[in-house]
Length: 570
Image (tube, rainbow, N blue to C red; front, side):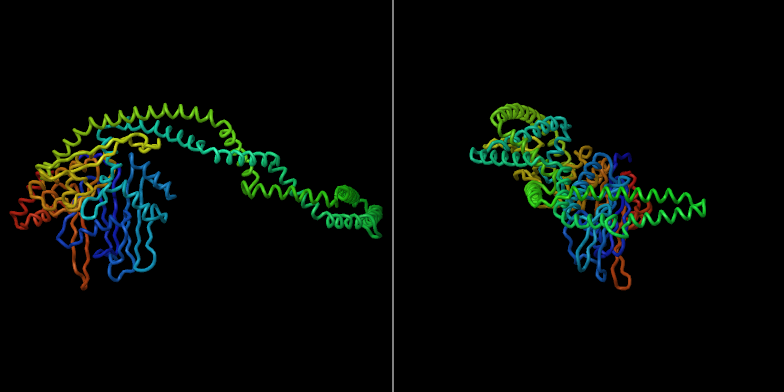
Protein backbone atom coordinates (compact mmCIF):
# COMPACT_ATOMS: atom_id res chain seq x y z
CA UNK A 1 0.00 0.00 0.00
CA UNK A 2 1.34 3.44 -0.93
CA UNK A 3 1.98 5.64 2.11
CA UNK A 4 2.95 9.24 2.74
CA UNK A 5 4.79 8.99 6.06
CA UNK A 6 7.95 10.86 7.06
CA UNK A 7 7.72 10.51 10.87
CA UNK A 8 7.09 7.39 12.95
CA UNK A 9 7.99 5.31 15.97
CA UNK A 10 10.65 2.82 14.86
CA UNK A 11 11.63 1.09 18.12
CA UNK A 12 10.05 0.58 21.53
CA UNK A 13 12.10 -1.26 24.16
CA UNK A 14 10.59 -2.29 27.49
CA UNK A 15 12.65 -3.77 30.32
CA UNK A 16 11.28 -4.99 33.67
CA UNK A 17 7.77 -3.58 33.30
CA UNK A 18 5.03 -5.79 34.80
CA UNK A 19 5.25 -9.17 33.03
CA UNK A 20 7.88 -7.98 30.55
CA UNK A 21 11.46 -9.00 31.21
CA UNK A 22 13.15 -7.51 28.15
CA UNK A 23 11.12 -6.81 25.01
CA UNK A 24 12.04 -4.89 21.86
CA UNK A 25 9.32 -3.97 19.38
CA UNK A 26 10.53 -2.92 15.93
CA UNK A 27 7.72 -1.07 14.17
CA UNK A 28 7.12 -0.08 10.56
CA UNK A 29 5.10 2.54 8.72
CA UNK A 30 1.46 1.93 7.96
CA UNK A 31 -1.01 -0.06 10.07
CA UNK A 32 0.61 -2.08 12.89
CA UNK A 33 -1.86 -4.45 14.59
CA UNK A 34 -1.20 -6.11 17.96
CA UNK A 35 -3.25 -9.12 19.01
CA UNK A 36 -3.10 -11.82 21.65
CA UNK A 37 -5.05 -13.71 24.28
CA UNK A 38 -6.68 -11.77 27.09
CA UNK A 39 -4.13 -11.25 29.86
CA UNK A 40 -1.13 -11.88 27.60
CA UNK A 41 0.20 -8.38 28.20
CA UNK A 42 -1.04 -6.22 25.32
CA UNK A 43 -1.89 -3.43 27.76
CA UNK A 44 1.77 -3.28 28.76
CA UNK A 45 2.53 -1.78 25.33
CA UNK A 46 0.05 1.01 26.02
CA UNK A 47 1.41 1.48 29.53
CA UNK A 48 4.96 1.79 28.23
CA UNK A 49 3.94 4.38 25.64
CA UNK A 50 2.11 6.42 28.25
CA UNK A 51 5.15 6.36 30.53
CA UNK A 52 7.56 7.41 27.79
CA UNK A 53 5.18 10.29 27.00
CA UNK A 54 5.37 11.74 30.50
CA UNK A 55 2.67 9.96 32.51
CA UNK A 56 3.34 9.79 36.26
CA UNK A 57 4.97 6.50 37.23
CA UNK A 58 3.73 3.91 39.70
CA UNK A 59 6.64 1.94 41.18
CA UNK A 60 4.39 -1.08 41.59
CA UNK A 61 4.69 -1.52 37.80
CA UNK A 62 8.36 -2.49 38.15
CA UNK A 63 8.76 -6.22 37.60
CA UNK A 64 9.03 -8.22 40.79
CA UNK A 65 12.67 -8.87 41.68
CA UNK A 66 14.04 -5.99 39.55
CA UNK A 67 15.35 -2.74 41.00
CA UNK A 68 14.53 -0.59 37.98
CA UNK A 69 12.37 -0.46 34.87
CA UNK A 70 13.60 1.13 31.62
CA UNK A 71 11.57 2.22 28.60
CA UNK A 72 13.18 3.52 25.42
CA UNK A 73 11.54 4.86 22.27
CA UNK A 74 13.15 5.88 19.00
CA UNK A 75 11.23 8.15 16.63
CA UNK A 76 12.21 8.99 13.08
CA UNK A 77 11.04 12.59 12.61
CA UNK A 78 10.89 14.67 9.45
CA UNK A 79 8.66 16.91 7.42
CA UNK A 80 6.70 19.68 9.12
CA UNK A 81 6.95 18.17 12.59
CA UNK A 82 10.76 18.31 12.78
CA UNK A 83 11.09 22.13 13.17
CA UNK A 84 8.32 22.10 15.80
CA UNK A 85 10.13 19.42 17.81
CA UNK A 86 13.46 21.20 17.41
CA UNK A 87 11.99 24.41 18.85
CA UNK A 88 10.73 22.45 21.88
CA UNK A 89 14.13 20.81 22.35
CA UNK A 90 15.84 24.20 22.16
CA UNK A 91 13.40 25.74 24.65
CA UNK A 92 14.16 22.95 27.16
CA UNK A 93 17.92 23.14 26.54
CA UNK A 94 18.05 19.63 25.06
CA UNK A 95 20.27 18.17 22.36
CA UNK A 96 18.88 18.47 18.80
CA UNK A 97 17.93 15.45 16.73
CA UNK A 98 20.78 13.78 14.89
CA UNK A 99 19.95 12.30 11.48
CA UNK A 100 16.26 13.16 12.15
CA UNK A 101 16.18 10.70 15.07
CA UNK A 102 14.56 11.48 18.42
CA UNK A 103 15.56 9.23 21.33
CA UNK A 104 13.43 9.11 24.50
CA UNK A 105 14.31 7.16 27.64
CA UNK A 106 12.54 6.71 30.98
CA UNK A 107 14.03 4.95 34.02
CA UNK A 108 12.03 4.11 37.16
CA UNK A 109 13.64 2.71 40.31
CA UNK A 110 12.23 0.91 43.31
CA UNK A 111 14.04 3.49 45.44
CA UNK A 112 15.58 6.82 44.59
CA UNK A 113 14.67 9.32 41.90
CA UNK A 114 13.22 8.37 38.55
CA UNK A 115 15.01 9.78 35.52
CA UNK A 116 14.13 10.67 31.96
CA UNK A 117 16.26 11.60 28.95
CA UNK A 118 15.79 13.12 25.51
CA UNK A 119 18.59 12.59 22.99
CA UNK A 120 20.83 11.63 25.89
CA UNK A 121 20.18 14.79 27.92
CA UNK A 122 18.42 14.56 31.30
CA UNK A 123 15.09 16.35 31.35
CA UNK A 124 11.70 16.61 33.08
CA UNK A 125 8.39 14.81 32.72
CA UNK A 126 6.92 18.09 31.47
CA UNK A 127 9.35 18.08 28.55
CA UNK A 128 8.43 14.48 27.67
CA UNK A 129 4.73 15.34 27.84
CA UNK A 130 5.15 18.38 25.61
CA UNK A 131 7.02 16.36 23.01
CA UNK A 132 4.39 13.63 23.32
CA UNK A 133 1.62 16.08 22.40
CA UNK A 134 3.24 16.46 18.99
CA UNK A 135 4.28 12.82 18.53
CA UNK A 136 1.41 10.55 19.59
CA UNK A 137 -2.37 10.52 19.89
CA UNK A 138 -3.50 7.64 22.10
CA UNK A 139 -7.12 6.59 22.10
CA UNK A 140 -8.34 4.11 24.64
CA UNK A 141 -8.61 3.61 28.39
CA UNK A 142 -5.52 5.80 28.94
CA UNK A 143 -5.92 8.67 26.51
CA UNK A 144 -3.22 11.03 25.35
CA UNK A 145 -5.47 13.02 23.03
CA UNK A 146 -4.51 16.28 21.42
CA UNK A 147 -7.90 16.55 19.69
CA UNK A 148 -9.65 17.37 22.97
CA UNK A 149 -7.84 20.71 23.21
CA UNK A 150 -9.78 23.68 21.83
CA UNK A 151 -6.68 25.29 20.38
CA UNK A 152 -5.73 22.10 18.55
CA UNK A 153 -9.31 21.78 17.27
CA UNK A 154 -9.00 25.24 15.74
CA UNK A 155 -5.73 24.26 14.09
CA UNK A 156 -7.35 21.16 12.61
CA UNK A 157 -10.39 23.09 11.40
CA UNK A 158 -8.15 25.61 9.64
CA UNK A 159 -5.97 22.87 8.18
CA UNK A 160 -9.09 21.08 6.87
CA UNK A 161 -10.27 24.29 5.21
CA UNK A 162 -6.75 25.31 4.09
CA UNK A 163 -7.13 28.58 6.01
CA UNK A 164 -3.48 29.04 7.01
CA UNK A 165 -3.26 32.19 4.87
CA UNK A 166 -6.24 33.73 6.70
CA UNK A 167 -4.66 32.89 10.05
CA UNK A 168 -1.39 34.52 9.05
CA UNK A 169 -3.24 37.60 7.80
CA UNK A 170 -4.74 37.91 11.29
CA UNK A 171 -1.69 36.90 13.35
CA UNK A 172 0.74 39.44 11.90
CA UNK A 173 -1.29 42.62 12.60
CA UNK A 174 -2.30 41.15 15.98
CA UNK A 175 1.36 40.90 16.99
CA UNK A 176 1.94 44.47 15.81
CA UNK A 177 -1.09 45.66 17.78
CA UNK A 178 0.10 43.88 20.92
CA UNK A 179 3.52 45.56 20.60
CA UNK A 180 1.90 48.98 20.20
CA UNK A 181 -0.30 48.43 23.24
CA UNK A 182 2.73 47.45 25.31
CA UNK A 183 4.49 50.64 24.23
CA UNK A 184 1.47 52.70 25.21
CA UNK A 185 1.12 50.92 28.55
CA UNK A 186 4.69 51.84 29.41
CA UNK A 187 3.84 55.53 28.86
CA UNK A 188 0.35 55.70 30.35
CA UNK A 189 0.79 56.27 34.09
CA UNK A 190 -0.87 58.61 36.54
CA UNK A 191 0.62 62.10 36.89
CA UNK A 192 2.22 61.46 40.28
CA UNK A 193 3.91 58.28 39.07
CA UNK A 194 4.90 60.05 35.85
CA UNK A 195 6.58 62.92 37.73
CA UNK A 196 8.39 60.52 40.07
CA UNK A 197 9.76 58.46 37.19
CA UNK A 198 10.70 61.61 35.27
CA UNK A 199 12.66 63.02 38.23
CA UNK A 200 14.37 59.69 38.89
CA UNK A 201 15.43 59.32 35.26
CA UNK A 202 16.77 62.88 35.15
CA UNK A 203 18.83 62.20 38.27
CA UNK A 204 20.17 58.92 36.88
CA UNK A 205 21.09 60.38 33.50
CA UNK A 206 22.72 63.44 35.14
CA UNK A 207 24.66 61.33 37.65
CA UNK A 208 26.07 58.99 35.04
CA UNK A 209 26.76 61.76 32.54
CA UNK A 210 28.64 63.94 35.05
CA UNK A 211 30.90 61.04 36.00
CA UNK A 212 32.28 61.07 32.42
CA UNK A 213 33.02 57.38 32.65
CA UNK A 214 34.98 55.21 30.28
CA UNK A 215 36.49 51.77 30.96
CA UNK A 216 39.98 53.02 30.08
CA UNK A 217 39.80 56.09 32.36
CA UNK A 218 38.51 53.95 35.21
CA UNK A 219 41.44 51.54 34.86
CA UNK A 220 43.96 54.43 34.82
CA UNK A 221 42.31 56.00 37.88
CA UNK A 222 42.57 52.75 39.83
CA UNK A 223 46.24 52.36 38.85
CA UNK A 224 46.95 55.96 39.88
CA UNK A 225 45.20 55.41 43.19
CA UNK A 226 47.26 52.29 43.90
CA UNK A 227 50.49 54.23 43.23
CA UNK A 228 49.54 57.05 45.59
CA UNK A 229 48.27 54.64 48.22
CA UNK A 230 51.71 52.96 48.35
CA UNK A 231 53.77 56.06 47.47
CA UNK A 232 55.86 56.06 50.71
CA UNK A 233 56.87 52.42 50.32
CA UNK A 234 57.55 52.85 46.60
CA UNK A 235 59.78 55.86 47.34
CA UNK A 236 61.73 53.94 49.96
CA UNK A 237 62.31 50.99 47.65
CA UNK A 238 63.24 53.15 44.64
CA UNK A 239 65.75 55.25 46.60
CA UNK A 240 67.26 52.09 48.06
CA UNK A 241 67.77 50.73 44.56
CA UNK A 242 69.46 54.00 43.45
CA UNK A 243 71.70 53.87 46.49
CA UNK A 244 72.85 50.39 45.55
CA UNK A 245 73.61 51.63 42.05
CA UNK A 246 75.81 54.62 42.80
CA UNK A 247 75.68 56.08 46.30
CA UNK A 248 77.88 53.82 48.41
CA UNK A 249 81.29 52.27 48.33
CA UNK A 250 81.11 49.01 46.44
CA UNK A 251 78.11 50.16 44.40
CA UNK A 252 77.12 48.55 41.14
CA UNK A 253 79.03 51.23 39.22
CA UNK A 254 82.17 50.49 41.26
CA UNK A 255 81.84 46.80 40.42
CA UNK A 256 81.32 47.53 36.73
CA UNK A 257 84.47 49.71 36.76
CA UNK A 258 86.52 46.96 38.42
CA UNK A 259 85.22 44.42 35.90
CA UNK A 260 86.17 46.78 33.05
CA UNK A 261 89.76 47.12 34.29
CA UNK A 262 90.10 43.36 34.62
CA UNK A 263 88.81 42.89 31.07
CA UNK A 264 91.37 45.42 29.77
CA UNK A 265 94.20 43.36 31.31
CA UNK A 266 92.76 40.12 29.92
CA UNK A 267 92.52 41.61 26.42
CA UNK A 268 96.12 42.79 26.62
CA UNK A 269 97.20 39.21 27.26
CA UNK A 270 94.69 37.51 24.90
CA UNK A 271 93.37 39.44 21.91
CA UNK A 272 90.69 36.78 21.31
CA UNK A 273 88.71 38.18 24.30
CA UNK A 274 88.14 41.55 22.66
CA UNK A 275 84.39 40.79 22.13
CA UNK A 276 83.90 40.89 25.88
CA UNK A 277 84.48 44.65 25.81
CA UNK A 278 81.27 45.14 23.82
CA UNK A 279 79.29 43.01 26.25
CA UNK A 280 80.70 45.03 29.14
CA UNK A 281 79.76 48.30 27.46
CA UNK A 282 76.20 47.01 26.83
CA UNK A 283 75.90 46.11 30.52
CA UNK A 284 77.04 49.62 31.51
CA UNK A 285 74.48 51.17 29.14
CA UNK A 286 71.61 49.08 30.62
CA UNK A 287 72.63 50.02 34.17
CA UNK A 288 72.67 53.67 33.12
CA UNK A 289 69.15 53.34 31.62
CA UNK A 290 67.93 51.68 34.82
CA UNK A 291 69.41 54.50 36.91
CA UNK A 292 67.72 57.16 34.79
CA UNK A 293 64.35 55.33 34.91
CA UNK A 294 64.50 55.00 38.70
CA UNK A 295 65.44 58.67 39.12
CA UNK A 296 62.54 59.72 36.87
CA UNK A 297 60.13 57.44 38.78
CA UNK A 298 61.26 58.88 42.15
CA UNK A 299 60.67 62.41 40.88
CA UNK A 300 57.07 61.54 39.91
CA UNK A 301 56.12 59.93 43.22
CA UNK A 302 53.79 62.23 45.15
CA UNK A 303 53.16 61.89 48.87
CA UNK A 304 50.39 64.54 48.84
CA UNK A 305 47.62 63.29 51.26
CA UNK A 306 45.07 65.65 49.67
CA UNK A 307 45.59 64.10 46.24
CA UNK A 308 45.25 60.60 47.72
CA UNK A 309 41.95 61.58 49.33
CA UNK A 310 40.69 63.00 46.03
CA UNK A 311 41.54 59.78 44.26
CA UNK A 312 39.77 57.76 46.96
CA UNK A 313 36.63 59.87 46.50
CA UNK A 314 36.68 59.34 42.73
CA UNK A 315 37.09 55.58 43.15
CA UNK A 316 34.26 55.51 45.70
CA UNK A 317 32.02 57.42 43.28
CA UNK A 318 32.65 54.87 40.53
CA UNK A 319 31.98 51.97 42.91
CA UNK A 320 28.71 53.61 43.95
CA UNK A 321 27.61 53.90 40.32
CA UNK A 322 28.49 50.25 39.70
CA UNK A 323 26.46 49.17 42.74
CA UNK A 324 23.46 51.13 41.46
CA UNK A 325 23.55 50.48 37.75
CA UNK A 326 25.68 47.45 36.95
CA UNK A 327 28.66 45.36 37.99
CA UNK A 328 30.91 46.82 35.26
CA UNK A 329 31.50 50.27 33.74
CA UNK A 330 29.98 49.05 30.46
CA UNK A 331 26.78 48.14 32.32
CA UNK A 332 26.61 51.59 33.91
CA UNK A 333 27.02 53.28 30.53
CA UNK A 334 24.38 50.99 28.98
CA UNK A 335 21.96 51.81 31.81
CA UNK A 336 22.60 55.50 31.25
CA UNK A 337 21.82 55.20 27.54
CA UNK A 338 18.59 53.30 28.22
CA UNK A 339 17.57 55.79 30.89
CA UNK A 340 18.26 58.66 28.49
CA UNK A 341 16.07 57.04 25.84
CA UNK A 342 13.26 56.45 28.31
CA UNK A 343 13.59 60.03 29.56
CA UNK A 344 13.18 61.32 26.02
CA UNK A 345 10.04 59.21 25.61
CA UNK A 346 8.51 60.55 28.81
CA UNK A 347 9.43 64.16 28.10
CA UNK A 348 7.67 63.87 24.73
CA UNK A 349 4.88 61.68 26.12
CA UNK A 350 1.98 63.66 24.73
CA UNK A 351 3.25 63.55 21.15
CA UNK A 352 4.26 59.89 21.44
CA UNK A 353 0.87 58.90 22.85
CA UNK A 354 -0.92 60.70 20.04
CA UNK A 355 1.10 58.81 17.43
CA UNK A 356 0.60 55.52 19.27
CA UNK A 357 -3.18 56.04 19.52
CA UNK A 358 -3.33 56.68 15.80
CA UNK A 359 -1.27 53.56 15.01
CA UNK A 360 -3.30 51.45 17.44
CA UNK A 361 -6.58 52.56 15.85
CA UNK A 362 -5.31 51.64 12.38
CA UNK A 363 -3.95 48.27 13.52
CA UNK A 364 -7.16 47.49 15.44
CA UNK A 365 -9.21 48.05 12.29
CA UNK A 366 -6.83 45.79 10.36
CA UNK A 367 -7.12 43.05 13.01
CA UNK A 368 -10.90 43.28 13.07
CA UNK A 369 -11.10 43.09 9.30
CA UNK A 370 -8.77 40.08 8.98
CA UNK A 371 -10.37 38.42 12.04
CA UNK A 372 -13.84 38.67 10.54
CA UNK A 373 -12.58 37.25 7.23
CA UNK A 374 -11.06 34.29 9.10
CA UNK A 375 -14.34 33.70 10.99
CA UNK A 376 -16.34 33.88 7.76
CA UNK A 377 -13.99 31.43 6.06
CA UNK A 378 -14.38 29.03 8.99
CA UNK A 379 -18.19 29.27 8.86
CA UNK A 380 -18.06 28.16 5.21
CA UNK A 381 -15.84 25.18 6.05
CA UNK A 382 -17.85 23.92 9.03
CA UNK A 383 -20.83 22.31 7.23
CA UNK A 384 -18.54 20.17 5.07
CA UNK A 385 -16.43 19.09 8.05
CA UNK A 386 -19.50 18.19 10.12
CA UNK A 387 -21.10 16.28 7.24
CA UNK A 388 -17.93 14.29 6.51
CA UNK A 389 -17.44 13.33 10.15
CA UNK A 390 -21.10 12.32 10.60
CA UNK A 391 -20.77 10.04 7.56
CA UNK A 392 -17.67 8.42 9.05
CA UNK A 393 -19.52 7.93 12.34
CA UNK A 394 -22.38 6.18 10.54
CA UNK A 395 -19.87 3.80 8.96
CA UNK A 396 -18.55 3.08 12.43
CA UNK A 397 -21.93 2.05 13.81
CA UNK A 398 -23.32 5.40 15.01
CA UNK A 399 -26.20 5.39 12.54
CA UNK A 400 -28.18 8.25 14.12
CA UNK A 401 -25.37 10.19 15.74
CA UNK A 402 -24.73 13.90 15.31
CA UNK A 403 -21.50 15.84 15.22
CA UNK A 404 -21.22 19.59 15.44
CA UNK A 405 -18.58 22.27 15.88
CA UNK A 406 -19.72 24.92 18.34
CA UNK A 407 -18.19 28.30 17.44
CA UNK A 408 -18.16 31.31 19.69
CA UNK A 409 -16.81 34.55 18.23
CA UNK A 410 -15.44 37.07 20.68
CA UNK A 411 -14.70 40.76 20.36
CA UNK A 412 -11.09 41.72 19.75
CA UNK A 413 -10.84 43.82 22.93
CA UNK A 414 -12.39 43.51 26.37
CA UNK A 415 -14.21 46.27 28.25
CA UNK A 416 -10.87 47.73 29.37
CA UNK A 417 -9.61 47.92 25.79
CA UNK A 418 -7.19 45.03 26.26
CA UNK A 419 -6.64 42.23 23.75
CA UNK A 420 -8.51 39.06 24.69
CA UNK A 421 -7.76 36.84 21.70
CA UNK A 422 -4.80 34.80 20.50
CA UNK A 423 -3.18 34.53 17.09
CA UNK A 424 -5.75 31.81 16.27
CA UNK A 425 -8.43 34.43 15.65
CA UNK A 426 -11.62 35.72 17.21
CA UNK A 427 -13.20 32.28 17.50
CA UNK A 428 -13.35 29.54 20.09
CA UNK A 429 -14.46 26.11 18.91
CA UNK A 430 -15.64 23.00 20.69
CA UNK A 431 -16.13 19.68 18.90
CA UNK A 432 -19.42 18.17 20.11
CA UNK A 433 -20.98 14.72 19.71
CA UNK A 434 -24.38 13.15 20.29
CA UNK A 435 -24.41 9.35 19.84
CA UNK A 436 -28.17 8.87 20.23
CA UNK A 437 -31.22 10.76 18.92
CA UNK A 438 -32.96 12.88 21.50
CA UNK A 439 -29.82 13.36 23.55
CA UNK A 440 -28.08 16.74 23.63
CA UNK A 441 -24.74 17.23 21.95
CA UNK A 442 -21.85 17.17 24.41
CA UNK A 443 -18.21 18.30 24.09
CA UNK A 444 -15.84 15.47 23.18
CA UNK A 445 -13.94 15.92 26.44
CA UNK A 446 -17.10 15.01 28.38
CA UNK A 447 -17.72 11.69 26.61
CA UNK A 448 -17.49 9.04 29.31
CA UNK A 449 -17.27 5.86 27.22
CA UNK A 450 -13.74 5.13 26.06
CA UNK A 451 -15.18 2.97 23.27
CA UNK A 452 -17.32 5.84 21.99
CA UNK A 453 -14.46 8.26 22.36
CA UNK A 454 -12.08 6.04 20.42
CA UNK A 455 -14.49 5.60 17.52
CA UNK A 456 -15.24 9.33 17.37
CA UNK A 457 -11.53 9.95 17.24
CA UNK A 458 -11.19 7.35 14.50
CA UNK A 459 -13.85 9.17 12.47
CA UNK A 460 -12.12 12.50 13.02
CA UNK A 461 -8.76 11.07 12.09
CA UNK A 462 -10.18 9.53 8.92
CA UNK A 463 -11.52 12.90 7.76
CA UNK A 464 -8.47 14.84 8.88
CA UNK A 465 -5.77 12.30 8.10
CA UNK A 466 -4.09 14.43 5.45
CA UNK A 467 -4.10 17.59 7.59
CA UNK A 468 -3.32 16.37 11.12
CA UNK A 469 0.41 16.52 11.85
CA UNK A 470 0.64 14.07 14.78
CA UNK A 471 2.63 11.20 13.23
CA UNK A 472 1.55 8.25 15.41
CA UNK A 473 -1.99 7.18 16.30
CA UNK A 474 -2.51 4.45 18.87
CA UNK A 475 -5.93 2.81 19.27
CA UNK A 476 -6.47 0.51 22.25
CA UNK A 477 -9.44 -1.78 21.58
CA UNK A 478 -11.21 0.87 19.53
CA UNK A 479 -13.46 -1.97 18.38
CA UNK A 480 -14.83 -2.72 21.87
CA UNK A 481 -18.53 -3.62 21.71
CA UNK A 482 -18.41 -3.50 17.91
CA UNK A 483 -19.93 -6.18 15.67
CA UNK A 484 -18.21 -7.94 12.81
CA UNK A 485 -19.56 -5.69 10.02
CA UNK A 486 -18.60 -2.49 11.83
CA UNK A 487 -15.30 -4.08 12.80
CA UNK A 488 -14.46 -4.49 9.15
CA UNK A 489 -15.20 -0.80 8.58
CA UNK A 490 -12.99 0.08 11.55
CA UNK A 491 -10.13 -1.86 9.99
CA UNK A 492 -10.61 -0.24 6.59
CA UNK A 493 -10.62 3.24 8.11
CA UNK A 494 -7.47 2.53 10.10
CA UNK A 495 -5.87 1.32 6.90
CA UNK A 496 -6.86 4.54 5.16
CA UNK A 497 -5.46 6.68 7.97
CA UNK A 498 -2.25 4.64 7.86
CA UNK A 499 -1.59 5.98 4.35
CA UNK A 500 -0.80 9.31 6.02
CA UNK A 501 0.12 8.42 9.61
CA UNK A 502 1.65 5.47 11.39
CA UNK A 503 -1.06 3.56 13.27
CA UNK A 504 -0.75 1.05 16.13
CA UNK A 505 -3.94 -0.74 17.11
CA UNK A 506 -4.57 -3.32 19.81
CA UNK A 507 -7.59 -5.34 18.80
CA UNK A 508 -9.61 -8.48 19.52
CA UNK A 509 -11.48 -8.34 16.20
CA UNK A 510 -10.30 -10.51 13.32
CA UNK A 511 -11.63 -8.13 10.58
CA UNK A 512 -9.49 -5.35 12.05
CA UNK A 513 -6.43 -7.55 12.36
CA UNK A 514 -6.81 -8.69 8.76
CA UNK A 515 -6.27 -5.12 7.55
CA UNK A 516 -2.80 -4.87 9.09
CA UNK A 517 0.30 -4.12 7.07
CA UNK A 518 2.29 -5.55 10.00
CA UNK A 519 0.82 -7.99 12.51
CA UNK A 520 2.33 -8.63 15.98
CA UNK A 521 1.23 -11.19 18.55
CA UNK A 522 1.70 -10.89 22.31
CA UNK A 523 2.06 -14.16 24.20
CA UNK A 524 2.51 -15.13 27.83
CA UNK A 525 4.42 -18.12 29.09
CA UNK A 526 5.51 -19.44 32.47
CA UNK A 527 9.14 -20.35 33.09
CA UNK A 528 10.34 -21.59 36.46
CA UNK A 529 7.11 -20.40 38.08
CA UNK A 530 7.43 -16.88 36.65
CA UNK A 531 5.25 -15.29 33.95
CA UNK A 532 6.81 -13.63 30.93
CA UNK A 533 5.19 -11.58 28.15
CA UNK A 534 6.76 -11.59 24.69
CA UNK A 535 5.89 -10.14 21.30
CA UNK A 536 6.71 -11.35 17.82
CA UNK A 537 6.03 -10.19 14.28
CA UNK A 538 3.96 -12.79 12.47
CA UNK A 539 4.77 -14.40 9.14
CA UNK A 540 1.96 -14.76 6.56
CA UNK A 541 1.35 -18.36 7.70
CA UNK A 542 1.34 -17.35 11.38
CA UNK A 543 -1.14 -14.58 10.59
CA UNK A 544 -3.57 -17.13 9.22
CA UNK A 545 -3.31 -19.15 12.43
CA UNK A 546 -3.75 -16.06 14.64
CA UNK A 547 -6.79 -14.73 12.76
CA UNK A 548 -8.32 -18.22 12.80
CA UNK A 549 -7.86 -18.23 16.58
CA UNK A 550 -9.55 -14.82 16.80
CA UNK A 551 -12.45 -16.15 14.72
CA UNK A 552 -12.83 -19.00 17.17
CA UNK A 553 -12.02 -21.77 14.74
CA UNK A 554 -8.46 -23.05 14.59
CA UNK A 555 -9.49 -26.03 12.45
CA UNK A 556 -9.19 -26.16 8.66
CA UNK A 557 -12.50 -24.35 8.18
CA UNK A 558 -11.33 -21.54 10.46
CA UNK A 559 -8.04 -21.29 8.61
CA UNK A 560 -9.89 -21.15 5.29
CA UNK A 561 -12.07 -18.34 6.64
CA UNK A 562 -8.96 -16.49 7.86
CA UNK A 563 -7.27 -16.81 4.47
CA UNK A 564 -10.34 -15.42 2.73
CA UNK A 565 -10.51 -12.49 5.17
CA UNK A 566 -6.82 -11.68 4.62
CA UNK A 567 -7.19 -11.87 0.86
CA UNK A 568 -10.23 -9.59 0.92
CA UNK A 569 -8.44 -7.05 3.11
CA UNK A 570 -5.20 -7.02 1.11
